[in-house]
Image (cartoon, rainbow, N blue to C red):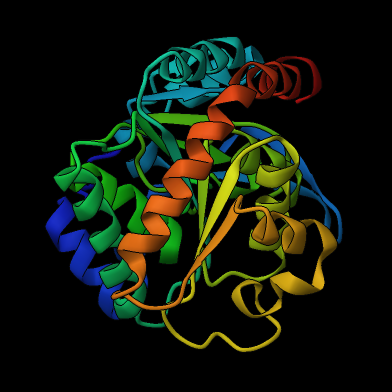
Length: 295
């Protein structure tokens, strides 16, 4: 079990704003997960490396049962993938919307603008007494995904992360950590299909595919374009994709282009998210199939 101390939410938030990473690398915290490997689409078979600090700090890690003993060696509390689907179903039965976040998960650059926008979003939800029943994301510790976990924790919102075996070395603590599929790309649908509203902040091809999954499975999307990310990234290119352009036209994809415009965009996204609630049963069925039958 790890003896390392992880930063508190305020310290982690400051670090993410300034350098895009919430805690420093500790190579001695990284260990092979038994003899388990994953298949990378370019590099072939790779060893699974786990960050022992985070394994012990997660509320629970849900994975196929063959990995439970190895996970517990690093302090993890384990559950099955069917258990994870049950957790999501419980949150889907609540009245409040489920929110998800997608975007850059890159250490190094400052994420000050993004942190300000995401914080303002949570503050407005709290003022409305409409904080999410659950916040889900791709579980990484850097960038937008790192901010998601930290800001949700500051507001007392339960968190769920979807990490592939590839991502166990770069995950950050979540209340619920689902370990499914080999690579980041393979688990993108899980990120998109879970929330009623997926918030995309900046983001490249991965965020675009997760946004498309959200729309395809009946959810809504809110794009935070609070600065110019350029024409090739999601906030500058979504209208080039027929499904996203149509979702924007019919109100299921909303764009916030400034902090001043965020309240209006939030109201529109919430309205779209309420309609997305009708898709919860079909989304849950797809999640169960993806987690229990295919992973």
